[in-house]
Length: 211
Image 1 (tube, rainbow, N blue to C red):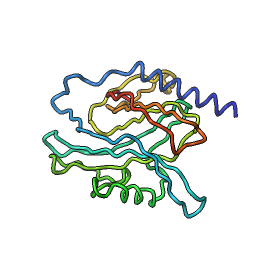
Image 2: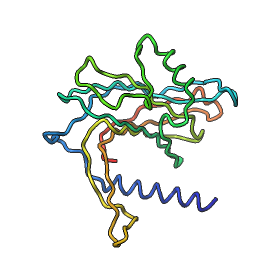
Image 3: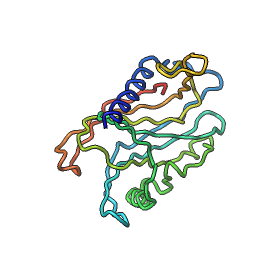
Image 4: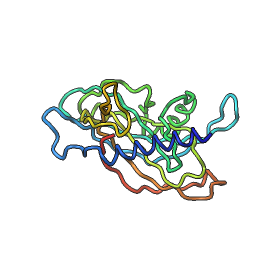
């Protein structure tokens, strides 16, 4: 158990170091750099009846992406939820299909063409008429969480390379880490942990980082 805790702490320490040491996204994009326009709904929760295991809680956000780069671009998104209790949860992994269907039904009037993140097309067409609405879903997390961050990558082709703070290659040189321009959205979570359905998320900030 201690090794798991220490291993998790080491990952978090390395991640924090990389965040501090990583370069900032360019203020003026390069001639071939692009970044999609994005709007989003704040996270919501939904209870879904599983075929086995009874009711299960999930959290989700809906993002609307518009490619105004002047050309069609490749689109390979990832989205992680990171809590202040040392958990990083990838989106839409091992999420039963019925969860997305429930979310789509809940928002069918506003988002009639809603897609799941893992089913989104890998080519984003240019122009407002080709904007896409995407649901990003996570299973419920630790009830002791007081703050969380959402990281959305794949919205830009801007990248950077830094040295890993710990790992070395066979020559004893730092392993290169490739970073992508990523949107970070921060929230605090309040309420009685025993009354999960009444938990209140408060939006704090958003910014672009290299991650």
